[in-house]
Image 1 (cartoon, rainbow over the protein chains, first blue to last red):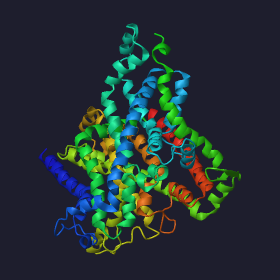
Image 2 (image 1 turned 90 degrees about the vertical axis):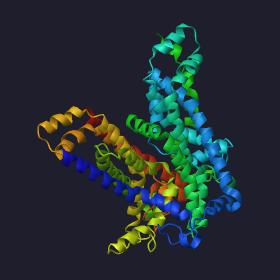
Image 3 (image 1 turned 30 degrees about the horizontal axis):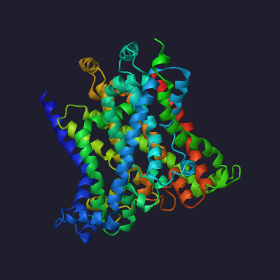
Image 4 (image 1 turned 60 degrees about the vertical axis):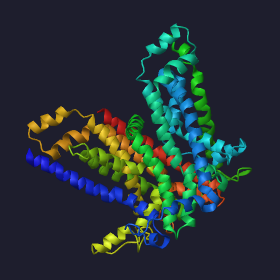
Length: 276
Length: 285
């Protein structure tokens, strides 16, 4: 038994070492270079900065006439708007899809689940947005994000619905509750755990989305956080300190989210993957 | 109880309307526009010309091959690495919760940020990776600039970012395996390796299938990491389907871009759906 304990200790040490090298070094690298002076950062070494330049972060904010503030505002609007709509339409959809098992619902279910696999048809989506006069607007972008996240969101809600006893709704129905009331006062409050998972996972996905804003929300006044970062790559290819300061600014919100909601994020992703 | 009375069809309508207008409808009309030359306002029908161009021009058709290499390799590597990581992280080591978080976190950061960081780490002369290789006595490689290594360098970065999700899926699967199987096996004298082969592998098959499907599809759809790290270059050795769609769009060839998109649908449909069917059929046995 003693030999086994030693083996686990060895595993601990080796595991931490390997994790440190493979997974932690890139983050340390980002952070130290974000704090360096320009020429020092351009050496791309992982050594500690000779002097810490916190003002790099202020510089990043000031760059391109405070573009990053606009970008955070745009990304914030996009995330909040999309997540709110997703909660409303996703919870309602997941509710009936789980409870009614007739052929119409079956077809809708398979259509929605196909959306988990098939990529978006990009140019025709732009065409639709243009016809609806929603192209290059945050509103249009929100609706596209909602459409793309509906399959995953409905799947999570539908999966959770199966754990809610059907007797609750039947009792509500007997007592003369309307269909809408049954949902809003009985069911929706019970969906709280999965709702928070939906909020966090969708917020992360939409905040990190680069491709869709690239296509559907062009224009510098509409730039989202990820697009600003991408533009920075071209603009600051010779000042890595600025580039990494921007990288850190974008990574920190995710780190905070992860520290607070670690279990919820991981469980949600697993539930989504396994049921899909 | 009459189900129709409690559950109104109207509840699905809002989700279905948004999903249809902004996802299904564009998908259906893409089949039509892929056979035209168009510019959002007008179109000229041209039959299968776009598809012919796509398959005859090597810079375009090689993207299909690259996408397949990308999807298969990222999927295989994530599967194998995540399996062993999960075995390691479900054993009795003390730091497993910390290590799980560390392995998972890259998944939450933006792909562009990951791309920028790894571009710097893979820098041919100054990059940390080559510095370490030189220190160990080897010669550095121009990871992203060399036509032979560029695609694989991006693939490895993708694995670094995505292996965490696969690992937590495996961990969830392995934790649901009944511990008594292992106890019985070790009483019968089975070694750790034998237990792994005879118990862990077959019983974590559902998790394995999820990982395969998830990783394969995300590999087929990949765009932003390629775009941030190589932009499809050098030449077109890292050009994937999604990046061709973007490039043709940016160059104004909307019909060709739409055709690329349609080829992507078809490829995913003829590969991923049967793959899923096959994996699920093996799960039942």
